[in-house]
Length: 44
Image (cartoon, rainbow, N blue to C red):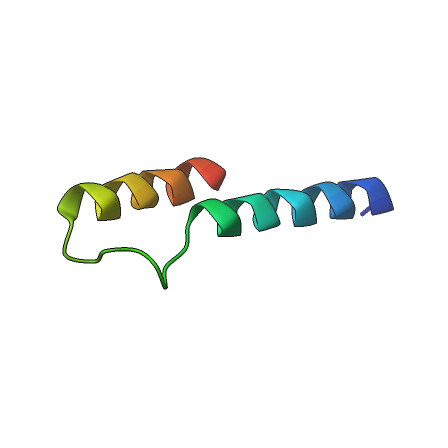
């Protein structure tokens, strides 16, 4: 895998990790859980 692709994947994973913060997520808020689930599915 070329270095540019690896860097791109790492940047993408970092961005997803910044948007999906499991430590600060209100796990009792169903809308927040569903929204973050959609984010993770879309990132795949």
